[in-house]
Image (tube, rainbow, N blue to C red; front, side, top):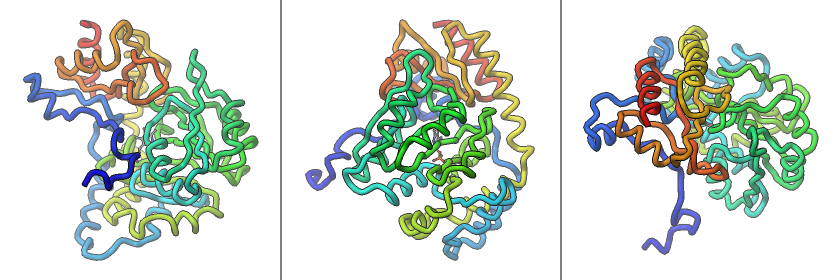
Length: 352
Ligand SMILES: *Cc1c(COP(=O)(O)O)cnc(C)c1O
């Protein structure tokens, strides 16, 4: 019966990090440092947990389809912008492409970057144009991105970029917004760890969507909830394109409450600042400057896959960058975790 499956799903798909339980079993390591998924190691805010419990008790009812409680909390937090919400930022990316892109139309992506944009575009039978970043520092090639964006419905830029960690200056983003014909989707998942602010651009441009997530600094990765600043004209069409109840009531309630607890992210943000410096000082392999809660490490002469294996044996899970596409095969991406995890990583990689 496999002949029935669409050809685009016969192979490939999203590459997931290895599971701590499997590594533990395979190598007989008791305590695993989980540094592969850029999560906040802290549990969610107590406010978010309380709100989620309350919503769970009422979960016999369908959620509010517009997510008004969360949208209102976002307005209180950020000001009078238009928002869309989704089942993770991944859900927003998928819906945005479904809203705008007809089969065969183009989506332009600055690479190497997060792989889901390409997968979501493929699912929509879009034509994907990749625009490589500069080799020396992974900054974007503004001219080429604009050129590709002249014929693309959506141009995708991740900043700070996953997995390279660098951010794009707001002036360059403005230049891209001026030059392209379609929408710019700016993936801002790591905004809390960087000093770059793109929100002022929302006031000037009506073709900018800024994607955000509760999965990273807000400690809600398991609840699958994200949001985006979107131009007002886009919102009603996005809502038509999404699945009818895309965001569940528990996640929406937890996210709205998380926004009321600005102290929660602070401990981890400080941890990231501290360990970003320590990684750069203490790891014997070259580390790229990062504006996010992870670093990309050049592990040559090893390949990324080999280094992932070496570190797994020592109880540390990191990501090989091979699956990101458009990168040489000698990089790994390492999240900043708890002290003991980071210490174990430094000690382990320096012994290899
Ligand atoms: C983690 C991540 C996301 C995914 O966010 P979810 O809200 O968990 O779907 C999106 N973009 C980038 C670049 C990420 O690293």
